[in-house]
Length: 312
Image (cartoon, rainbow, N blue to C red; front, side, top):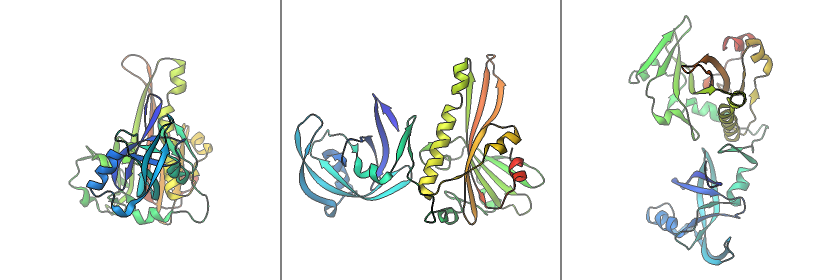
C-alpha cells in the first residue's frame, strides 16, 4: 500500500483492470467514480448485465448523491481473488475509489504492518489448499524437475559442489522477482549435479542496514521482519493453512538469528526464511547488518534436524 497524508491507497485489479483504492473501513461498499465506470464500460471491463438499480448515497460531508449498484465479477488484491463483489457507482466524476466493507468482510481479519495489509483469515483445518503447491509445481513459469538446458537463454553465474550446482540468474525479469506485490532482488536456481534437473527455486531479497546508534541497532531488522510477516501471512491466506514454524532451537544450535515458516504438500515444500546473514564494518567505519529474506520452492523430502542444520 501507499500512505499519502494519512490515507492508505491499495492497488487492486477490478475485473483485471489495475486501479488504486482508498482503504476505507467506514464505507459499507466498494465504490467507484462515474469516470472510472465509463472507462470500464467503454473498454469491456463492465457490461449491462453487471448494472443494478439506482440508489442514493450519503457522503461524508452530509450531501446526498445519486448512484448505481453494480456487481464486480472479480477484485484481486495481492494475488487473492474475490468474486461477485457488490459495489456502487457514484455519479460524480471526481468521486474517490473506496474499498469498503463488501471486500474487507470477505478478506477477514487483517492488520497493517508498515504500509502492508497483512491478512489473517486462514484456517488450520483439513480444507486447506496445499494441493495448489503440487498443481503449480514451482514458482510462476519455472517448474521443479525442469532440465538445466531449458534455462540456457538466461545469463547466470553458477558454482557447484558434489551434490548440486547453483545458478544466480542475472537481470531476471521483474515478473520472476515479484511475490504478491513484494519486489525481491535475486532469483537462484539449484540443480542436481547428476541429473541436471531443477530441485529448488529461491527468490531472495537482501537488506543492508547501516547501524550508527543503539536505536538503529534495535530497528535494523524492522523492514525485513515486516516483509517476512507479510509474505508468510499472504501464503497462509492463499493456501488456507497456518505455516509450520522452525523453532528457535534450530537457529540457536546453528548460531543464527532468524525465523522460518513452511508448508509441505505431497510433492512440494514452500518456505519463507528470514535471517541475519552477515555483519561487517562498512567504508564509513559503521557497523552494517545484512538480513536476507528467502522464499524457496523445492521437492518435498522428509528432513531431520541434522538436515535442517546443514542449511545454515
